[in-house]
Image (cartoon, rainbow, N blue to C red; front, side, top):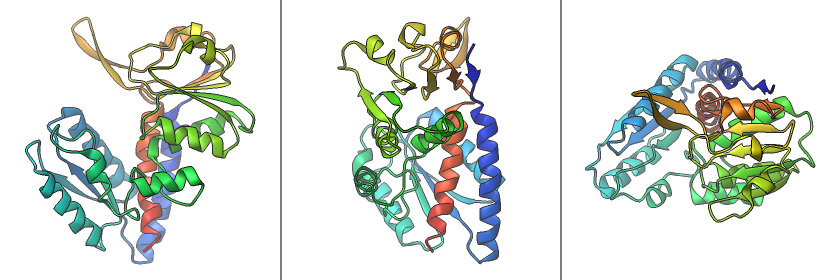
Amino acid sequence: MAEIIDGKAVAQELRNSIKAMVLELENAGISPTLALINASADPASAVYIRQKERVAAAVGIRTKNYTLGPKAKSSEVANLIQELNADNSVHAILLQSPLANHLSFRNLVNLISPDKDVDGLTTLNQGRLFSGEPGVVPCTPLGVLHLLRLVHKELAGLHAVVLGRSSIVGKPLAQLLLNVNCTVTLLHSYSQDLEKICRTADILVCAIGKPEFIDKDFIKPGATVIDVGVNRIEVDGSVKIVGDVCFDKVSEIAGHISPVPNGVGPMTVAYLMHNTVKLACCY
């Protein structure tokens, strides 16, 4: 049976270290502050915002919550971002996705100053990552890499397969893994022979948004499996949260596996706080 990677416990350790860093900044007269913008009616987004506020409060980071609603005009969101860019009391800005359908996430997120881009999603910060220059890195890939380093003392030379090519997880994670000298294969909806390729992976990271899509037939014995997926399914009239991996079956084959929930999710929020502190240190 696979050893479970307890992301919740690891995230708590990280949060403890962040809390200590926040205290040092406070003593130096800097109060790390994160602005959260929500321009949608997505109920999950509201939940995620509240979760981020709770974790921020727990580590001593201040938050400013801007709920614009699904009818917000693009100009309204843009003006708010520009105001926050100019506000020296705000160190980090997060534009919660998804936005309302009439709003362009890519256009609006690129209005965020790269020096306040806490999610590392502006074109400039993503370009810095891919060119190996210092910049802000997306939170989920940072969390995944943290968990992998706990399992593998040496990542260089391992074959990592990443399922999913989003700009939030798949692409930046593939680059991070290349940066630590993994051999990386990036798979997506047009890829062929998924099972065959996945079975060659020492590390398999799943971020495709398909509930329990990955079963034991995809897994190389002893492989490390990181499940980034968060899917809501109905079971006996109630909603259940599951990942992209069929946890019970894959656990029989894998060497290590992250669960859903309490795997990557807590790490993502912890690294959001980490990035906020990193940006506050620039002031």
